[in-house]
Image: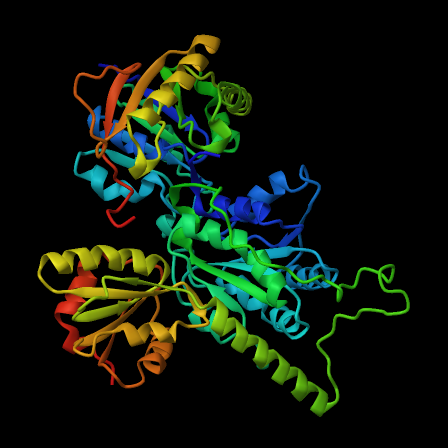
Length: 356
Length: 219
């Protein structure tokens, strides 16, 4: 397939098909509706399942069931819809079932707005569900990167038996870009799904059960220890980030997704002014790329965390920085997208942006 | 130079570039009104260009609701009928994509006798309008749903910033074939402002240089 022009949401849907999705369950919400719309048009022809459920809560529990049966399943929603799915997400993570969740963020809190935002960083990385669980969270900045991640996401979910969350904002969902669907994905040797609840024909006498209830405290603690070991493995193997212009950078911006795109333009403008600015762009938000902060020059004057939210990722930036450099913050929210000039100003007046 | 009729409807496949072309035509052809009939998209609708169009004394009509920029509700102002009742006005109507977007033409069923064009915007790099067969299927669906006949074609084949002369010419091949099969004239070939081309190139129809109003430079 040569290059074609696609809208972000359509591209997410087609990439899911290329990634081997067996079933989609979801409930409509702006600005992600083109994902279910595209899948509703194409899944049945491919002999796969598309189901519009009666609510977000049922959608995520259908994902739980189908993932338990060993199928490759996905759901998608936007901020308040993802909020409704949190209980199911915690259950799926606890039962160690693979699935892919796409969140196309809009302004919050509450019903908020339908304009793009990054206000769900905490929701994605800290979880709205209960207990000590983690999702593998990707935050692509372009439609091409979203496609590449989507195609790989079902493999990653299967490999670690863990939900993968692909987090974009409404702008990436709605904008158009020329893209290539043929970029190869990383090959992974996937384990047999011998845990799937799909009958006893392959293992007579043994019933598989997908479950998140462990009444024995010691048993549950062992389960938590096992999960933490898995999360550590994910941290070692899957942490992803991009470094931009880091050599001798006087200031380092940390930004992801759409905000990183805006910052790229700002960095060019700043370099023209003679101010050397680099960027750490987390591609995985969890695991957060802490090691990238070792690449910041000792002489750097500061780190500016830029978000389309009021200061959420900055917690991880402060932890990763560990007191080494001054940290400043720039954020817009509610669906407002800043112009690159605002980031330029924030760097020029860095001392006013430093957080205490 | 193409003379615009009183009413021009712009239709086409979802994401084919209708809104950019509508805004460019309104400004370049000095039209009086731009009507945004897109009730499908939440972002990138021509109503976002209200202030820009104001500078050229072009009136924008879309929804009358507060927060019309930030809503994806299917409300359309009754002012959209204005250009049908004042023949001194020239208006361009920017429809939502596909036959679903063309559905809104049904409200103009009583105005078939007016001076109207319905142009189909084609970008062959959109996956469901990549071949003459798919485009003709789309024309049939749009005409069936909207009740108006397509009267002309616009070649808007592009890959945004990666567009070269090759994409425009590949598009021209397909659009020419559609034109021959349907007897519909090619009215415009669009060239994006950033694409560097020799000035002496001649394309089908009038060459329309597009300024990108919707796409910020960091996008």
